[in-house]
Image (tube, rainbow, N blue to C red; front, side):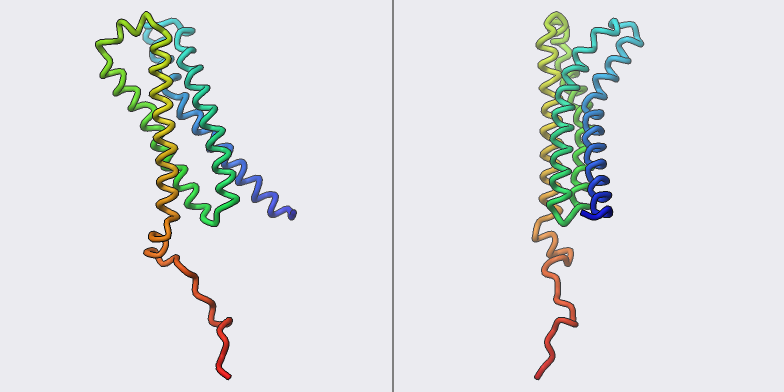
Length: 175
């Protein structure tokens, strides 16, 4: 294996690891924001939001590993590396939006139930984890859907990337 191939492989794996770390950060960010808001406003002691952080960290680490492995595999197996990264960035944006917006919508809709949930820590953790899991699943669906769309034969044909013509130098001249 040449040095150039090793360097390219190291860059691909480093980029996949960086993307996995970014996915972990996006999943964990709402818990950190909620923790800093609650402790800064004097609503809760600093140790109370660590359970939400732990749930988010477990889901985020799992999703980060899935992202790392998928990107590493796809970037070595497919010929359309830009399409892999375009789909991955779409998924990261979807995850960032959904992980915070879904939580805000669910907590707003359950505003009447916040008092009963306050005494039941496990139900609140299950709600938090379920919403985060739903955001992760939706982001994974976005990634797969965008990648399939980008690599679909119909789209490639419409863009002019269908069958590649044989260069003129390979044509056989007459007798």
